[in-house]
Image (tube, rainbow, N blue to C red; front, side):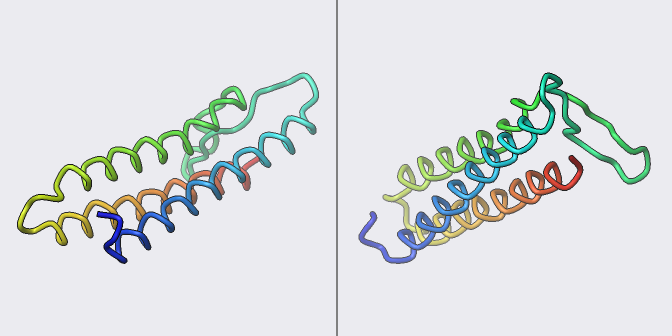
Length: 117
């Protein structure tokens, strides 16, 4: 299955986005943890209408890249599972394309955590 060129391209993009998210999360963790000293509370969600919605431990920020990684593994596993079907190309493009879109939205959420704090 990896001999198909478009699947390789999808996998490289998914791995690159997830690696980028983990590096950004770690850099946010290091920078914010260094500035906070003893207080480990950070703003995890900000709403334009109501302001700060969610305050929590800085380690909860790693839920976002973990969720992206789980979604990527599930979509890749489903892609490998559906290789014998007739409409495999459509299924592969749908699953892997949606994985990229979801990962991009989750990286935007991670960026907003950085900007709010």
